[in-house]
Image 1 (tube, chains in turn blue, green):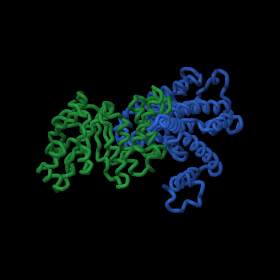
Image 2 (cartoon, helix red, strand yellow):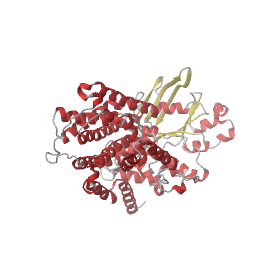
Image 3 (tube, rainbow over the protein chains, first blue to last red):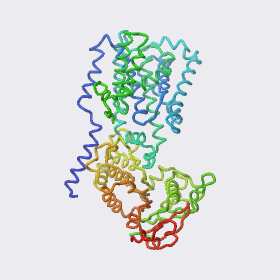
Image 4 (cartoon, rainbow over the protein chains, first blue to last red):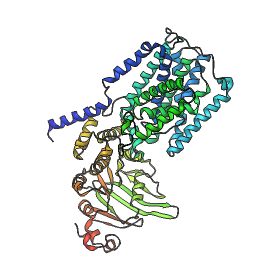
Length: 331
Length: 259
């Protein structure tokens, strides 16, 4: 190999590797639209806030499920912990939202670190059950410790101070939506860097083939523990945002439905792709909103039907119904 | 080429599963730059021995030393860091990643960048270090033209090459090759044999293989394993002419006349 062509080759390789991490042209456009949405669609600020929170929660699950291959049916444990931590902090310590959110993140990260040893061993089924069990335990604890959490009535009367000392939380939810979007964007950017790094690549290696990951010297257990802890912190941020922007934390933040919903919407949007969580959150929340105005009691029927069709025909063919019944389309 | 420096030594390895003794008092020494073949019929305990050497299994008795350090109780990933690397008989690849991503992450891991989460994959402390190594490996293993395709769409021969390239990206001192040409179609075989022949001279290689052509063209030292026990050890000529080996393993004399 001559010197110049080797240099050429290295350039091509560096380029190929960088392509994965570079921001695509549509991404800043997308985020600008998202940031403008509370102003452009002011009357829908409440649902925009909800979507931002759920999208952030889904990004957290994607880090463990999509990127690392850890199945979890109890991700609400960390969401709920963040919600109660933020609500209690506002009630008992101080009402500043940013400090409260940092506290919620810290508490749920700590919980994630404590729980991380439970997901290191065993099969997917073991993990599914263990994560489910942890969320159930926390649900029941929040129920029993009613002197602290308000029990089944929930933690009411959480009053938040103005954001950064300037922007009061309004009833229309514009401040809330902006706040949630900005927090989600910051954590999204961090998650994006992480997933494109060497660390992120070792997570995907573990997901694809744990045996080989070990055989090339990746400390698998420590990687699993670290990403589970990080994801717990992100889920805690989402939970904290919910408690702060609704001024309320109730037992349903720990509920099984919440864990199941976030997995469902992540699968709808696509795993192993950070925008999948966002897309899933948008589709899921809008479907929920639209269908439940038409048929308030039976909206889950339609969500269920949608999920079954999506899983059977695949995401690429979903919008091309004429290909649904052809054989051999999926590969 | 080979000096007298012993790189890997296994002494008196015993592995019992319940009442079954899969490995029975196996002693094996690899010198620097060795081309050592481990042969034996199915069920001879070759896979168990690999698992003992790489740390997947803990021996019931015995001692394993790598570069003068006792590694008998070291975790698998720590052995890799010290230079004990293996390939797999059945490809163990990262299916959704491309060969380039696979090698970049493996090289990064060896450079201690595996926990660096801020910089993009391919970044290294000394500029271009990871990229340079990836370029060399892709070139050496004829993977350049497919480097950006997901691994699960590659031809079998290419996947086989990647299997070995990953191991080499770990910068091994001792490389355990587990049946590298198993299942490779004839058309893709030559490319693979060439790369195996061109492995770095300072790496000690232990080759586990059924293909006698490859064994006799590659190895300068051979160990025959039967029922978990070392039947004999010697250079290829000795092994080829050993009546015991002929009886137990090679079966027919004509197959052994290959050196």
